[in-house]
Length: 209
Image (cartoon, rainbow, N blue to C red; front, side, top):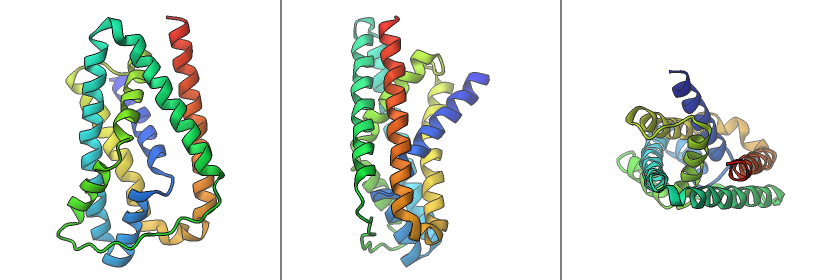
């Protein structure tokens, strides 16, 4: 039971941190909330989170397939290193930019908010490699096993962590809007440091296998 709680907290935190920096999904959630109402923003967020759950499951399936072939475990860890290195550099570069994030105009009806959320989340192709890398890390750390309970915990934590951030953007963005630039910069630096830490841990696991 303890490892389930650790797995949920670790995955929830990783999903939360990955969604915090202002981007396409959370800024659209905020925009929809302002223009169409908070309920519509929540429905959009549920659509996004549902797709994240699907993508996290696909990521687990990929990791599971690779892990069951011992000869490719090292390849999987090297892939994880590449992923974490990419995100560390990406978030650092984004943090260095000082341009303001502007909300894009979105025309949505309550009827299709959910499916718009699903579609926009599906367009983010970095989600699957991100969760594949996390899954590889958690597996090496002994926090996750390829069993139904662990897989369910992992994908639910990914979805709820994402939804939690979108919910905050939906209800509280108006209070954060004047601080968006500084908020974005700081959160991206934190994410860059987190990815660097994961990269170092993965390297150590490869060297001391």
